[in-house]
Length: 471
Image (cartoon, rainbow, N blue to C red; front, side, top):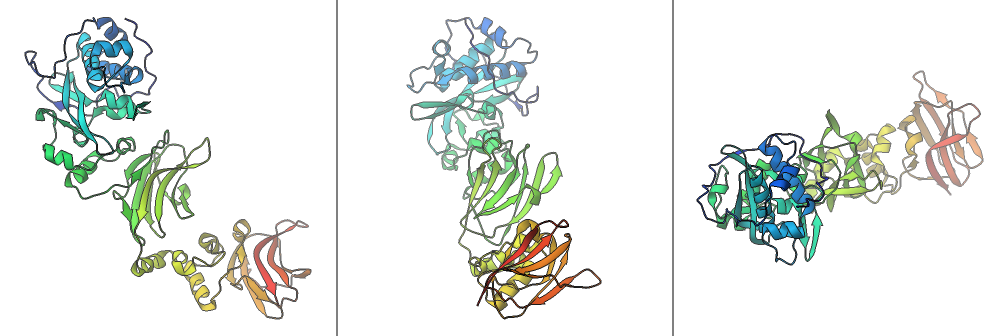
């Protein structure tokens, strides 16, 4: 037999199964559906090639699984059911996948049983299905589904899986959420499930496994019912593992939620309505683990996203809907993020983080906004605005000619400071012992007025604060 290519998929890290289950093997005299029909082929040479160098049964199982996932496509004509035809044509339905695995495994001394039953896909569609229980040692084995591991079908199109190992050595508590065996001895769960219960389970997604959600937690929630998960999107090669996230579809404004993730060498963020909470705002726990206690402070959605290094685009991995907030919700937001409440949404140049870095506490700024009734703050330039601590400056963008204004601040850097109003320069600062600068001026020219700094002698001046002067 011509074997074809050996798979190129990355293999599980360990040479030992993550989970093994005790089970008495089916007797060879059992003539049930677990025993496939005899083959006209001798698969011993194929088995020898595939398992060359494999010393343990687990390694042999893994090698056969990898080859099948890499080389066998799903038969969208639904006509190939046997191992031999599946091997010849390199495609088949689930029964063919399992029978081919069975015969190759048998040829190298590995005991395998085909499990018949029903499966439920991520859309909630239930249909007949077959998967495997393979013995890694005497009376101990594991579950695998090479059909689902190989890929998925949409209409008449088969798409190869980017991670076939999601369905290799599957935890029984996870498997029962989507695979219901006709023979209950194959459940191997702490609490058995009835077919009626299975039919009412919420559909589960491969992505829950791909992102490493806690199997026991998910199983408990699915079995209990009455819950909805956030929306998950595939982010290939993101290296993202979700250690702890809100396990619900919708979140509430003003409430804190814990996000704890493990991620590879990629940038990530929580995104909500134009606001990015990036890596530098999270707690670095080491070993690629980051966490944050995040308060929801806007609508309508919130997402956890990872940056694609090749395209520099943000890819959404998990998305939540945000419930319509009440006044009570906004009161909670105001306690921690005063500039995120609806009252200041339409005020221009409200950059909370920038103003805070320049020494203006957000609560104080909200108070100033309320007291002045301003609709537009002066423009604070992000980089230059970090060079000073503001004590007191006009907090409205538009100033008037002939009116008196006082500027007081403490500079962090810079050699010279000036207020520039058109062609008029003001440099006569009062400097206190602690280095605080203060000046009172009366603008005389319409146009712009800027608080500016020179960083090097004879260098150009850079604007820190920008105003508009009107009559």
